Image (cartoon, rainbow, N blue to C red; front, top):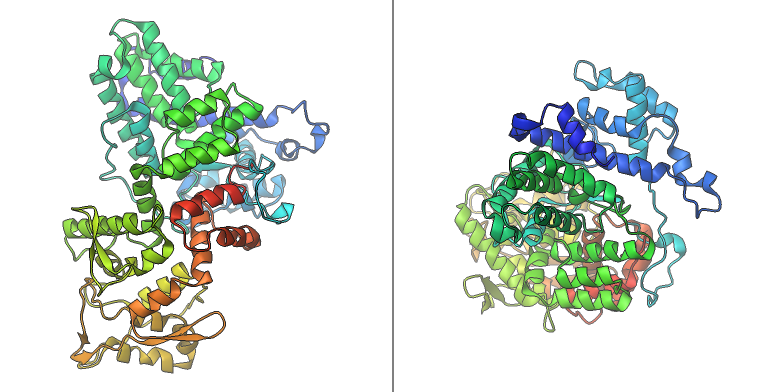
Length: 629
């Protein structure tokens, strides 16, 4: 397949003058990159592993049962299957979890595709070979192709059983922020490409993005790749260190970029496919060839996805593990490709467990890493990350300032020698992003009394004690709040009555009382702060009573107000466990199954004493199977 991309471009009429047509080029490159990816995947799956003493029992032999997965990938796009189905609910009203397909046999899946797709829309026409190919593609897509493998770290003090290891997703897409951060580091840009106007994507469990690229996301990636490629060739000599007429230099530059972008040594076959696109564009000029090949690289699945099966590489075995682990660590901590030091050690084969920890500690000490994790992990966890998604009745500039102040608060309380989860919840101060420091304020304690959090859990009409309370018990303590399927009515305000008094209808109603007792008191604790985060003492003309009863794991705690409640909860094992659970959900990009309580408890035990977030991260790398598999 050395000239697959070039030949396909010629067949689609993209040679010579029409090759530069933006819409056709982008569409073709994107579909070709998908097909190329599946081609490599199919080849990787189908090829027998000669080292396997019992190849007939391999996973590949179990799923290679009928259709053509490569054609099925194209059919999935052509018949618009992704408009309704996907790996996350933001991809349609009929989500499919490919790791848990209900149609467990190939034949049943083919029959379901042929018989049960909606009429008059497109998917219903996928019958016969199309249904067989699509079913085969879905089975490849949904099967875990890699055994868990051993942990890198032999130092774990856990005694978990072998079946209680935390398996990685086999395929994870770069999020939009990871995509643009990777481009900045890949091309050494002066600033991160803007995501202004980029479509918002719904997250599952706070941190998860869909595996596949939505149509709107794909368009956004294409626009960004065009802008970056154009910027590179517009300052060609400076950006590439090549002269305008040196073709060998251009090809070397493209090869080096492909290796860093794909985060692995690139196979000759894959590299020749990329260079084929360069050669077609270079018929007009070397700059055009560089532009087109860079754009292909930026839209390639080898860049957009982080597969556990590192296909398209000429590395293997332990050498390949070096690159995989470098990429895992880098994206975990920085949301970008491995930096030069980490990349150099991966190429030299120096990434043993001790060296990986040293790189983790080095990266965690960098302000850029802490800023990134503060926004992408902690601020997402506390629901204060995105100012545009908070409120439409507050000016964006004011909301952005509040979010930036909250990030400053996180940076000054959660990280380093003096950082801790406890300080994150109890520090009597507010963040000031203009000075990057904290300002003492005994009327507020912790992140949950910062204006950004208050704005996120309020509306233009009132505070939202129910939402505040549910967040507190679900997201801070990881307690389960039962789902109510009936119509939820918020009590109408009564003149001269506080919201606490209005909400008593919930507590007195036998249908509502049991559930609302779990979270109403914790929401009411924050009533001393209005919907804009301003401190107040009265509501509806009456003095606010923010006291309540907090149900502990074995008793109750009577608190006076939010400050008292937060100081109590900050010292609980329950908070430490929940923090670790959120972190592992973020690190592994998946909800943490209950059977992994052993790993979670080991992690909680390792961070007793409220060391900073960075210490918890280091312990995650040592105590879990993060680098395993």
